[in-house]
Image (cartoon, rainbow, N blue to C red; front, side, top):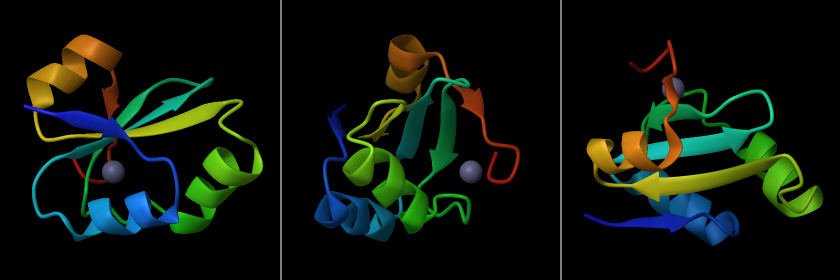
Length: 82
Ligand SMILES: [Zn+2]
């Protein structure tokens, strides 16, 4: 059971190669959870939010454990990859 924050493009690319686990996007409009394979996890958005805007209104996390994600961030499921 582990989790980490995606800080840069290397972290993003690494997580996208993982077959298991979840990506949680913390956003001012609400927290969303996705599978790592979700096509809605779009790299230009990540770069915009995390790198260019310095996480002012968005943070990305990875976890391998769904229960941990629910407890920690209480996210809503992405409708595309649920
Ligand atoms: Zn999704």
